[in-house]
Image (cartoon, rainbow, N blue to C red; front, side, top):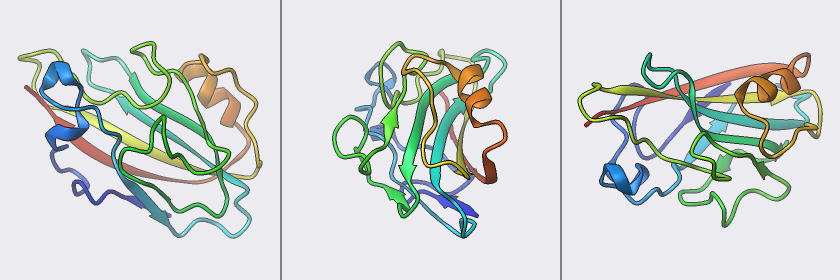
Length: 155
């Protein structure tokens, strides 16, 4: 399974429109597409996390219940035009949906890791404000495959 973005290559820099206004951007959610999911996939889940030592797994985006026949999330879809049935959860900013990069000044380039999960269940039972640990726990035993894409941003 593979996940890509038309906005930046794996290992590349995340462009300004996709970062938070406090870091000079517009907080537009990143366009993503994927392929090669296992045939028995029933749904997808997505996490965007900053594992930088300063950020300590800051959650930028959590999505569950992406339909099994979906293969993309369009640019700017968060909060507006997500695939039917998809549920966006709360991020570490305390908002529902996408929250772009906004690393502290002088902390170097931060990695933003997008992980797509192909799941054996059509729905994930989880509260909207669950957090990363509960998200990972809710996926346990349901993961058929994963794919990652990493973008970098610093200021």
